[in-house]
Length: 220
Ligand code: SAM
Image (cartoon, rainbow, N blue to C red; front, top):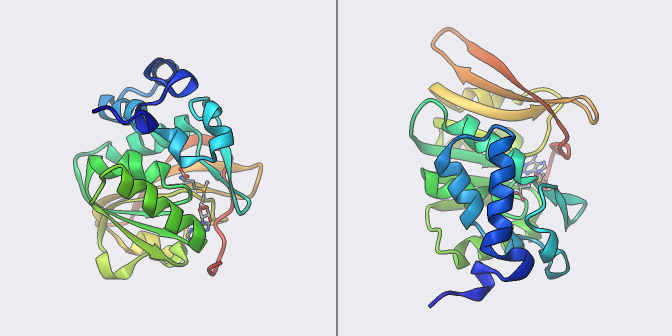
């Protein structure tokens, strides 16, 4: 039986989602697995009911605690950049937020570890992801700037909040060949960057300007 809460009606229906996917294609997202996740993850369950009708607009939306659910284009772009270079087994996400990015990414990788500094957001994200039947995610309430040493090295790390400079532990927890996708810089001057770790150092590629909330220290 189709669960209407997930499949959606009206502004959350398959047709509305198809329009979003078409828009992302036009903006250059080409990975079909990623586009498929954008079509199938019910973004409307990751925002307050009052914002549900806006869930398939290509914009960030508030999720409380001064935080936002990422814009679908950015989620698709970061996921695509992470997947480029081959299949992923051990992946770390910093900044779980609503859990939307987590739900898009998790079925595309073997194991996903996600860290969020605001406990009520993490608890809510965990519930939603469980409801969707996604089982390969482990959660931590903590400061993601220090990574998650216990499960390192990672073959990919995605950071959903912007540090002023890239936290050294995240680079250290990447395995050789591993990639890190992270927005870097102060508000108004952020750049999305993809780093790839090599034997001799780290290769840096800019993916363009972005606007993220800052990566903050400590927990809340
Ligand atoms: N991608 C998420 C989604 O789809 O809902 C949105 C992430 S939101 C833009 C950034 C998140 O990073 C916020 O929930 C914020 O609390 C979290 N954050 C900021 N600094 C952090 C840190 N040092 N460690 C872990 N999470 C952090």
